[in-house]
Amino acid sequence: MNESNNSSPWRPSATMETLKRRAAMVEATRGFFAHRDVLEVDTPVLQGGANLDPGIRPFRVDTDGRTRFLPTSPEHPLKRLVAAGSGPVWTLAPAFRFGENGRRHGPEFRMLEWYRPGWDEQMLLDEVLDLFHAISGWDRAHEVVSYRDVFRRHLAIDPMSAPDGVLADLLGPDAAATGGVRAAALDLLLATRIEPHLGRDRFTVISDYPP
Image (cartoon, rainbow, N blue to C red):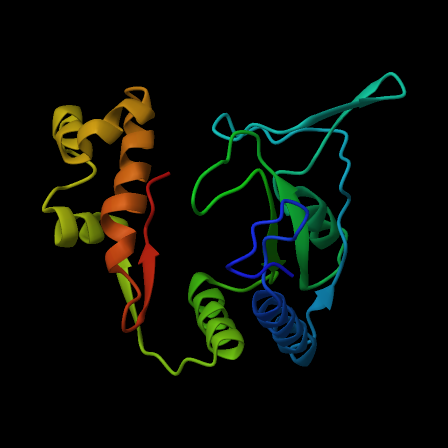
């Protein structure tokens, strides 16, 4: 794989160390769910319908006179399985989202998603934390903080009532990227002004997201 001192364009961008770490994480994830009797499944990569979320743009694939879409997540196929009585299922599936280009996001990525029919929020949270510990090897504590309180703690504003102008001032030049959409401004504040301060010495769970 590529070395830091070799910029040959044909070389993969991932180092062997990164690939080995990824493989170990996938293996740990597979073992975690197998031990808990959660069934691993594959979901379709070409789908007949698109995600209806207006904030997510799918890729279209036109073939054989039909329009299909690359999945933006494995959500719908997994929910169909659960509705058919599959019991708990999980997948690590390819996902595609148009326009997701940045330091931490790309248009193609893998998404881990699983379903636990009959479980409540606390049971799922406990399992998420167990999974993080299993794949990271970190013996960290965790905290649960509400969406509202995390804004109050780090930006001293109430995200539910702060005027749009206050959000724009906090974003500075980055405000232009939100197109004046309030939800986009809050998302950008969370990603760029709050998240960098989270998870340094403990896992941080943000609860009570607005609908």
